[in-house]
Image (cartoon, rainbow, N blue to C red; front, top):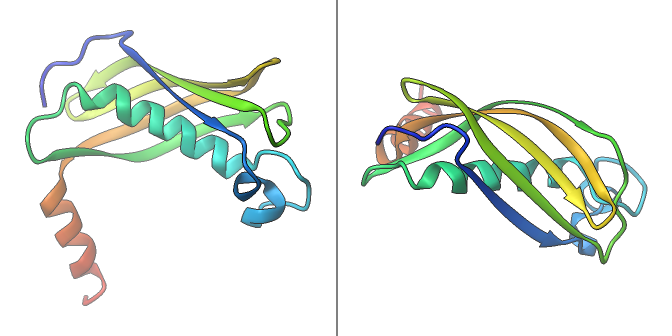
Length: 131
């Protein structure tokens, strides 16, 4: 992994579609953006933010996320998640994450990702099934 620049940020956006609603993903019965989908967008933003610092064969995996989901977002709205690098300790990088729609912030929190060798990581995951 290359040295990371603190406060580097990236964003990811998605139009809220039916497949992203709480009633569709099993996280509730309402027709609003599901919390797991907001979280996935936050992780995508952090992954994109860190991608500039990865060496060949490396990827990052999420290891921690503490967030709130403070406001509902209906289908048809666009949600944007941003991630900003707060700190790096070896291969562990901590981000401030935030999600918003056209009306403002819908969630925010802290996310950690660890840089790993992609091939070895996947191999160890496969081997864990056989142990």
